[in-house]
Image: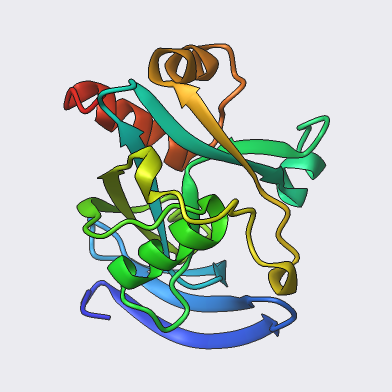
Length: 193
């Protein structure tokens, strides 16, 4: 908290049910020097990591499909989302987190994911920063079926999709998860697949 134009007045916790929701009252100094009192709700679910697994020889990517309640509540008729592999950091380093998530969700054992950037997905309401990675996979790296962890109530379908088909799915609205679209576009711009 280093911005001299922001003075936090009060932080009130509204919920700690699954993640943390706080109401933050603060003063913000405008360009003309006036101080405005504002209030925002900030949802803190922790930071995360996401990865696009790609195979340049086969020209394929590994994606996952699972039910997402918030998307269902906002008009996604089935609630099913096609996404890159991702997970919350918890206490892990981003690279260690994504290696673990890849194995749990997809069944692939990867070694050296390449970090490409860090992004805030919804900075107007959510504190989460996502660390984005890419990694090449091969059939020999498959050590299990994946599918997620039962104790985390995960039921994940692993999809191997032709890269051009995945890009077309974005255009058709069949893939509409922001982190997935970002990583597919990164792969296209950088000729990974």
